[in-house]
Image (tube, rainbow, N blue to C red):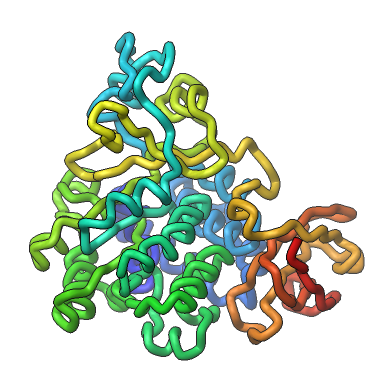
Length: 431
C-alpha cells in the first residue's frame, strides 16, 4: 500500500479521487504483479493482457501504469494515447490579448485571438533564469506521463547553476543523493517508475556533472500528508544545513502551487516550504499549456500556438512592464507553453534543440522478433544504468531512430523475456 501511495498519490488526488477499499485492493494487486514482471516490456505486456478483465475504475489505474511504462520504453506517442490525463483547469484570467470573451465549459472564460498585440513569445529557459536571479528557490513541475515537460528542466540546469544554485531536488528519487553523486548516473533501483525514463536519467546525470548536490526529498514510506513531508525534507536537508543555499526543485503537477485549491484542502509543498523557510519560491508551471489529445482546437493552448509557434518551450511576455505572464498568478509565477508533438512516433523535442543526434535503428537488430526493445547505454555505464535512449518495436519489419549525444554507446536489443537478441557498439561523432 505504501509503495502505491508513494508512486501514484498525485494521480489519485487529481484524477480519480479517493479510492474505495475494493479498488485499493485491486490496485495493490495490479501494482504488485506489475512490479514482479522481469522487465519493462514484460510489465507492458502484463497490463495489456489484464486490461479487458478490469472494471472501468481499475482500468484507469492500469492505464496510469501503462502510460508510465510506455515512457520508459520510449513510446512517448502511445503514453499520451494510453492515458490521456488532462489536468488542465479553467483559466482564472483570460489570455493576455483579450478581444472577445467566449464561454467554454471545459476551460472557463477564454479569449478569441485576432492578433498577439503587445505580447511576445520568449524562450522559457532564458525567461525563467532571468526571473530566478533574485530568488533562492525555483520550483518547476512536470507531467509524469509526458516527458516533454522534462526538456525545460534539463535546459535550466546549467543556467541556474551559473546563477549559484547549488542543490537539485528530484521527485521520484529514493536513493541517497550522496550515493548517486558518487556513482555519477542513476540505476534502475535509484527511484520509482518515473525515474527509469531516459530523459529523467539524463537530468540526473547533467545535475551531477554540473556539480549540484542531489537531494532526495520524497517520503519513502506512507505518510498522512505527502506535501508536508516533502517540504519538511527539503527544509531539513537543504536550508537547515546550509542557510545560504539556492535550491532547484523538480516536482509533479500541483506540488509547486503557492496556494491551496488543486489538491483540495491540502497545502501544496511549495506553500509549506515558503512557510518553513521564509523564502518565496519562483513557481513555474508547464502542465497547463501542452499538447493533450483529444482536446478542442479552440482551447487556450491551441489559441496560443496558432499565433506564436516556437520549437522550444516558451513563455508569453507582455511588452508593458516587460512582465512574464501567468495564467494563475495566485499559484504560479510563470506559465510555460510547450510546442505541439503533432502525433510523431519519435517527437522532435527528443533532439534537445540539437544537443542529440538521430541514429537510425530497425528490427534487423531484433532478428525479426517483436516486441523488441532497442536501447543505447553510455559506453562507460553498466547494464542496470538508466538508458540514454530506447525505443520499442511492436511489429516487424519496422524502422525508427534513437536520439543520442556525442559519444560511445552500447546498443542492445532484447525481447519480453529479457533475452539479448542483438548487440552493437556505435560512435556518435560531432558534426
